[in-house]
Length: 84
Figure 1: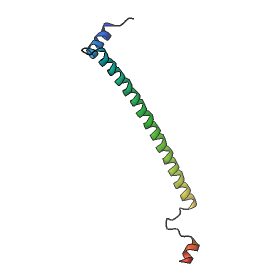
Figure 2 (figure 1 turned 90 degrees about the vertical axis):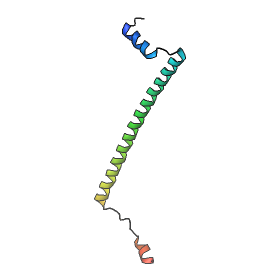
Figure 3 (figure 1 turned 45 degrees about the vertical axis):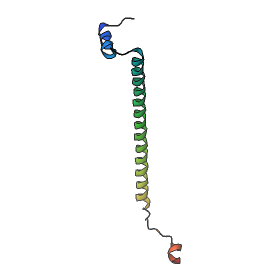
Figure 4 (figure 1 turned 180 degrees about the vertical axis):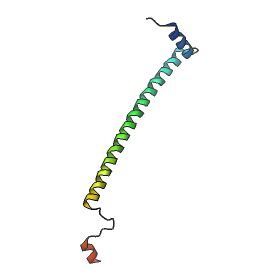
């Protein structure tokens, strides 16, 4: 395996003074951090897509209400109004 002197010096500066178990733990933590960053990215994407769908649905509902006439929140059926 050909490894440049620069790479060896970089590894030495990064891992110097660590024993094997510490270096393995650092690697595991970096791998876990990478997985978590990917998960956060995926969840952020999912959240953005869901918010987009909600906005589109909300805009569609508003357009239908304007087109068909919005219902009043104080709507009382005629049968209930005449009974009271």
